[in-house]
Image 1 (spheres, rainbow, N blue to C red):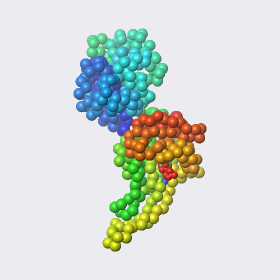
Image 2 (image 1 turned 90 degrees about the vertical axis):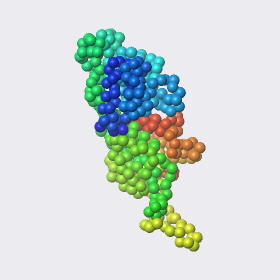
Image 3 (image 1 turned 120 degrees about the vertical axis):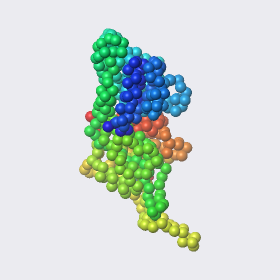
Image 4 (image 1 turned 45 degrees about the vertical axis):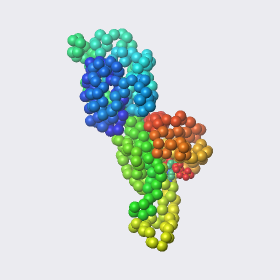
Length: 399
Ligand code: CTP
């Protein structure tokens, strides 16, 4: 299954474009999310309306569509996917890809993406056999582009031979192969996410403003690279990642127990905003006003530090332990000290001062701190941060 996997589908302008409607359906049946992009020529063969209706997604068409740029820039669009599929990949699109021509939205996305690309070529047999196309094919496979088909058979133009787009089940199998055999195939990564809720009594609790969106995005990106992900989450408001082993918890103590149960893992990412304190002796029944004006006094106890506990494990420690540092001042100094104090390998430091809008927002501005220094990443969407972090994790633990 492809639960939670994101496919950016570039539909080229060929008669085989009609098969994309079925392709979208079959990929969705397997749980994938499909975001379609159409070239202008593709619109001559299928209407954007039918593609939108079937995919349940906006269809991206124009490079200079200002609304799109405001919603999602083309660079971001090219990366908010686990795999880019080009079907049908026409001779024209293949030539553009091979030569780095970026004159419209589809070709620009194909140049800007940092994800793997799978093409399903479809064209007339002579065009396929032409030396130029074969040269382009060689260039593309040399660049790491994956290819499915073309098949041989009777073609719409009346000729016979190779050039017919692979059948939909073949393309789906190639997509599955590409997505499930990512660099993190066979690796287990544990991710914590969201806030924790520490009860005061059965109806009240202490919490924080974490939405869990960065943790969800990281888990999703790791799934996209083929990892098995155990996702231990507090009561987050962000959508849950798909295709993970989901473990829901409320308190820090429950989160620690779930993390211990979830190990061993090849890597662990601690993105949760764990409450530092819990209420000592939380009441089993609702605390009532006693009518005298006396106010309840809460006593706190320190919660276990999950990141430090796992980082300092003598046996069974994941090979790579990644923590987060939410700071409001002296971000790098505090985060560097935190990495050493907690014993993790990397710390993703971010400034959560209210004016940054990061906590609970959609963007993040991070510095990755490791033993060799600090890498300052530009401000970007939380999904982009997640993709970059997942790719770095794959460099260390991936096959
Ligand atoms: N963390 C954890 N368990 C805790 C507290 C924090 O696992 N009880 C993890 C978080 O998931 C994060 C990292 O530790 O990866 C740092 O969290 P942060 O809130 O920035 O640090 P604190 O430990 O709360 O330190 P301080 O209060 O000094 O900033």
